[in-house]
Amino acid sequence: MARELDEPLSIMERISPRDKEVILLATIFFWGKYMRRRINSEGFEPVVPEVDFNDPISILRVGFDLRRQANSDIEDNVVSAVSDIISKHPMRGEIFPHLDNAQIRSICGELDEIFENQESCAQCESWSHYEEGPEEFAINVADDMLWLQGRHLGLAWFSSINDWKYRRPIIKAVLREKLFSRISGLLPSGGDE
Image (cartoon, rainbow, N blue to C red):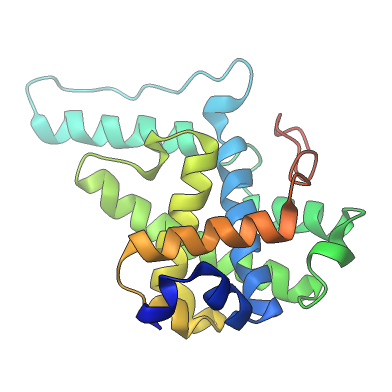
């Protein structure tokens, strides 16, 4: 498959419609996840626990807790919220004809689970996936999570591409093909719904 990656049209023709929908769903899910963070809600103020500034472990613990609070979901159920929005969207049948609502919810759940695990690991190394804007976050995290979880989601071919320099152009090409300019309005940007 590596040879075909040099020819984007060739690889795009070989990706099944269902696989394209999973790639699109992952990107939309992570965009929604980014937009629904508590830090994006009006009036968000984290609860600052007590900290012992003489204890490095205490300082780290507080830092992790503050980051967790900022990046947690507004209503604590991003999987249901995003999958419900997609399921009820007027363009749902046009954009995701090969995935039923249960599959959409299941895929979002698996992606969220692996993401939260990876984000915890990242925080232990003093970084976060959230360090970029929403579009970059959505594409980059979808790439990473589909690479890690692709075999479980029916995208074994995607998981076998080890270099992100080949995977991310595939995601961008799928987005261009599937959405054109239709992403506007697919998910609310304010996080109220």
